[in-house]
Image (tube, rainbow, N blue to C red):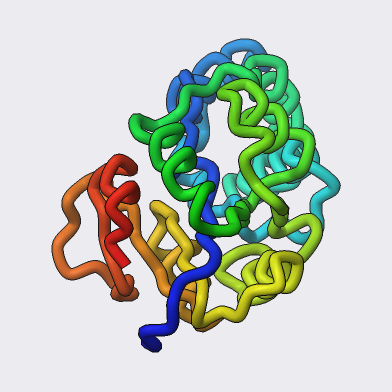
Length: 225
């Protein structure tokens, strides 16, 4: 990786800057109960399948319906049962009930004076916009690319390229900060962007290997790249 000076810092949103007050694991049992259905999959099943439906879905509600219907079909159930659970889940989910991760505001305040800032997220515009607004981060980025809706989903290179083209910055002069090895680190590496992995769990020998690693957003103030 080149030692070219950094001009832009790009961020993931979910699990990096913000997180829901209630996890999918909290909401799914409520959705099954509201739909009058015995649970037939868990949050890990949903999260593992999420990316398969991003590009073909109109929004996250449509994505969830497609995903839950497909899981139901695979389990030998009527797909409409999955759609009913998805509707109940949507009724419980409030995209404004999010919290900023510790250090998010401090890091963005410090970096904003030195770099162009952008976000690249696997999430629809309405949903992600409400999250950022709820924690006071909606005016912090020069551009937000909603991968899976405006471009291919991460880890494809297209959303990173779209953000950098909007900023007018070359890949080798940019950094991407994200918490997912599969989507964030892999995507940034493929795009020629320096990947900084937000490792919240102290994982040994990550794969793919990031160019840098932080365990706290506070560490970004001192520019680990």
